[in-house]
Structure formats: structure tokens, C-alpha cells
Length: 320
Image (cartoon, rainbow, N blue to C red; front, side, top):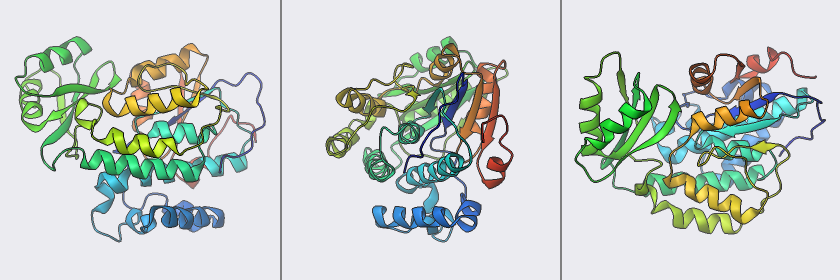
């Protein structure tokens, strides 16, 4: 599914792909209704998944879109529909790309490391494994906003519980904590008393990016064993270490397995892309979460969000 590229000399464009939490009812509806090729891709996705993801995205099956097993494939599909359309309209050869958690799979697919079909199968397996890793209601996550890194770590250290970790290093003043529900409750209570801070509980009942996700590694590993990995057409930054992905398939697989149980070092990913020369960031997928985080990490760079057909039409500064 990856589009053909024409190199753009001196490109300073970085791509960002969002993760879970950016979904909304009706996502990609304008793309699906307005583009025949996109409708065929959605039909193909429904067949690969074995259920009507398109109906779930459109809100025709209640609240299923907010269930992890459906959320992750939906966000991946939305992002890839946009990427395909961008590839048809622009001669875009990015400098680098990164994705937040699930979005890392979108970035790898966009870079030609994984085919669309294989990535969708991997995302399905990953989502099911993460959803089933712990009993429903046993775990949780919360974003702590307005505190520095050291203070976030102090709050975690003060909690008496079995598992509590920082799952996402999102910006200099936003950290997502993840763990068993009692530990999360304690940390939320402490953090809510911090001056000029805000705590937001996330609508998930799992502890993503902690050791509690270890049960999901077996099924994901088995799935990845049957997948063909190709060398990236442009650089991709890994969540687990903020470094570029290697070309070796076994090392790529190892990074994806480690990502399940390791924090998303999003600040490091962004700073690495800027260090590499990125000056124009394009967020591709539902919502504008990553664009907002980028502004909190470094205001010296430009950012554009592309989440629908209108966003593609308004995309400027890219060779057509």
C-alpha cells in the first residue's frame, strides 16, 4: 500500500502518527465517502480483521470504538487512508517519522517497513493482547499535567503499591502514569494536590507500557515471526529509546516487543527528529494531540495537523 516517492532535496519534514485516545465517532467518514480507492481499502480492512471496522468507526455498534481491540485498528486505518491520499497528491519524501505508541506501526507502514495488510494484522493481534493482558478494571492510567519530570517520579515513588510506572513521557510537563488501579488512585490523589497541576484519568482499563503488558508479548511475537520486514524508505524513530530504527528485521521485532512493556519516550523522539534537521512537522491521523505536545516541547518548529480531506487540501509547503 505504500505510495511511490520522489525525493525532495533538503527536506526538513517530519511525520507524526497518533496513538490510542485520538479516536472519535465518524472518524474518516469524509475520506471514505469522498474517495473510491479509500472505500476499497476500508473494505479490505474489514475482510482482514473479520469484523466491520468501518461500522464501528461510524458509531453503528454502540461504544465499541472506545474498546482497545477496535480503537487501535481504527486509528491505524484512518492514518493510513490519509497517508495514501497525501502520497497521491504530493511528491513527499520526509526526512523522518515517528508515531506515539500504536502510531509507531503507522510510521513503519508509511516508511515501507511493513505492508498495510501485515501491519493491520499485527495491530489486531497487539490490540487483543493488550486488552486481555489484565482482568478488566484491575488497572488504569492517568495523565499528570503541569508537573516536572522529577516531581512525577517522586509522586510514583511515594505510592505504596504493586505496579506504578510512567508510561508516556509526553512533554516537559505532561506524564502518563500506568499501573494497578489502587496505585493509580493513590497517585491521582497526591498529584491533584499539586499547585498549578491537573490530573486526567484516561478511559482505559489497562496498564499500557508497563510490565503488566508482558502477557501480550507472546502472541505479538508469534505474529511478528511471520511478517516480512523491509528497510525503511525514510528514517523512523523508536519509542523505546528515541533512536532511529535499525535495518535488521530481528532488531526491529525486538524493539516492537520491548515497546509493549516500556515507556513511550515521546519527548526524546521529537527532540531526535529536530536534531536530525526536522523543521516542519505534519501530524497525520485523527485529532491534534501530537501537535499540541510538540508546541510544549519546542515552539521553534512548525506543525500542521492533517486529519481529514480538508486538511489535505490545505496542506501547504509540500511539493505537489
